[in-house]
Figure 1 (cartoon, rainbow, N blue to C red):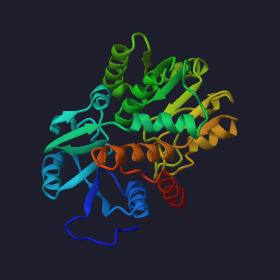
Figure 2: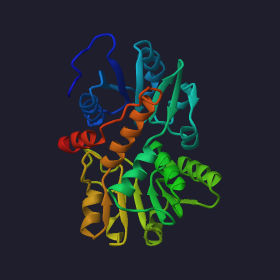
Figure 3: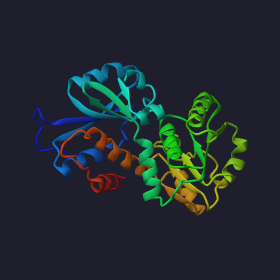
Figure 4: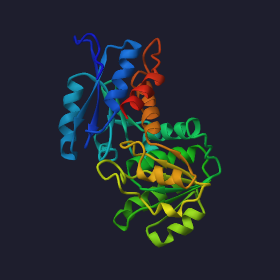
Length: 294
């Protein structure tokens, strides 16, 4: 981890809360950025369970932290503890970026815009008018789904386990309130061949395939066709079994680290939005730090 040269009282502090964090690359990425742009700041991970949120947030505020990221399983559970949500955070109903503004703890979601930016710039794929099949309905899914809706995706079909049907139903309802008729859902895996056949864009927003369960995929990849664009939000490992098997079928793919990188860029911009002059993150260094580590 590259740390700033000074650790006096003016060193700005940022961090990540959630669990598990052992494989997170956020500290690698943000500390590389701080060093590159000469910013006297440090980013640290803090393993946090749900029952610890009420204690850790006031503690970090008292230590004058400037901003935080939030990861699973806290992206939705943290909302009642916040003073304010911006328009994106309120719309998504899932928060991954926190910042303090005039003593108020505010939340937003940069996952979705990060995903769409990676999809367009690194994936070379325009989702406008395309039918999408999405696996999952958790915090990451909400951010990605609303960003795709904003980007003009043709439709979104959600698939998840029966045990998650309430979350799936809620996300579908919220998306349809945003744009009538854009979303449907199902929980019967026997219907997967049909819905994959109707979709062009396939997105896994679950943790299936994440280390240490690297031999898992969210669905039977033999159902894929070369026309599919397959995306995974998992980035450890960066070459998930889903992506490797999709590539073997001739599909275009997008690994999860691009969403992680671009959401980090957007989070940094939110943390520093009131600075004069504006602070510009070194996205190239952030990308290199992540790819070198992976």
